[in-house]
Length: 258
Image (cartoon, rainbow, N blue to C red; front, side, top):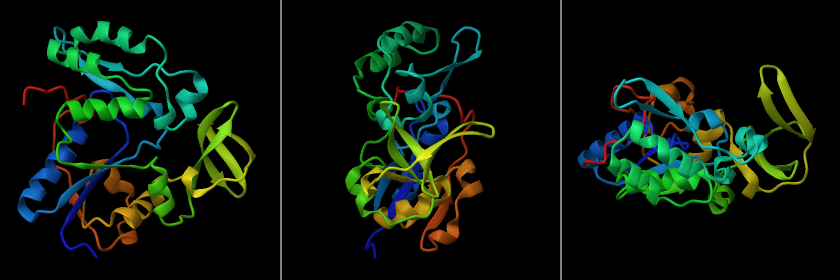
């Protein structure tokens, strides 16, 4: 058992400028820490693969119109199916995006964006969040970490980082098969090859139990979307805290004045 509180919140990479709901989770965790003490852990789910989640919504500085910017990915398979920690940016993406940014953010944000160098989108996002000062004093635990994966409990519903057409994809394991969801009722399936725990990450409904088996948190800050599917009965020892309200929660946070 923990001798002091462990306050946790989780999030996959959510834009090169983070979505405001992530900032609200961080603020909620810090406020709770001021009351009860302990440490804060960011469960960075960089094993996720959905490219829609990394969209960065910025508003035009003159018109106020929202624009959805995203990474340029190396190839269709990586974009759709590779885990975020293996999704690479296409050559020239950062420079191209940098030229667009002055329409949406100030020069300080542009310079911060310019300063980041990373080999994949998970690293890029994490570096941006750190340079924004959001994660100071917060412990970051990544779902792609092989040591974490080996230490985690077994779960019945999971994904495997598996080879597919010269790439590594996040394939669901279903009854001896690997499966990729192409949309709607369309799936690609093939016989599962041998895999180890270092390749496994949890599905949505098993993520909490898998995470908790390693982090042993006492408090978990949950977003509105998470509350809809978190199976709190899987971790009755956790006290669940609703994240603070924040307006325009899906839009990007670009305030670096603090």
